Image (cartoon, rainbow, N blue to C red):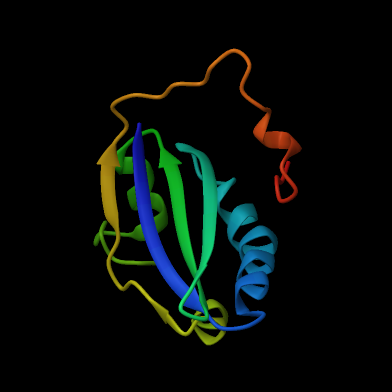
Length: 117
């Protein structure tokens, strides 16, 4: 498994607008791709802006290529998303998933307020 990491920043309500874009536009497209295995969007407020970190999980580099094209490390940012964000990475990072730990008593992430099914 491979995690693809991309980050951005948004001002004001831009972070909520980006989450709406991600859930309404990006997720439906990702779910159509063979080899897409899930995603997590993290956020934090810092210096008056909201930092956004998107981690998508993929079964292989070939699966990522279906999404990103030949330049695997090129960020895929739709014009409507770029208009929402104050800045964003033009390049992404890929990491092999080396270890995952989910304790038996861990809370179900599907119970989180922004989980999408």
